[in-house]
Length: 273
Image (tube, rainbow, N blue to C red; front, top):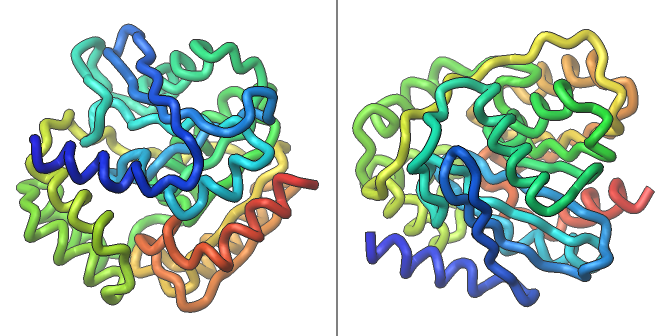
């Protein structure tokens, strides 16, 4: 655990803005939230993907924190500095209740919400359940929202899910990204295999015909996770007000770190509208 936490702190130290760590108590346990940006900035909540930790936003948060008060929690039950010692996390509804506990702690009646991968799935489900609270929605290569996972991806991922080891996670992430992954973050993610975590919540594709929340969907054009074209097509059918950006040469687990020079202008332009 010590190796994981030292790697966690090292990646967090790469955030280009001052960070205030805040511990939020709820019926689920203690959630560590990294807070930065101007106190009077527009509130923005960022949800990382599975096993990525809140530190993963190091290449993105600098651009977003210019105008936003950013809140980036470590998802409870996953590797990170949150402590899951309360109510079990068994369903998607539990995840949404957990997110409510975080935003309510900061008094965020309405806010902007973004996420990557499974974090994007939580964000999407939250917007479906509570559309009046989400001012804008940002989904970075969301999983289980607009298309299912590819069989080949699942076959590669399952061994690391059933019996995670640093070597398995490192190999899996290197395979999906073609090796184009931040090495320091890669070692943090790999070390997370030995960090105590809770049972993974089964993903669920929400049943919704139309979502009226203004939404940006950034799709990894070379993702091995799912079919990018299917994600784009189905997202366009469900989202009434949307911007869909398909990035060639980008894989699922390269985001949100790479390529920052292409991703960050898309995010800031959407949020500035």
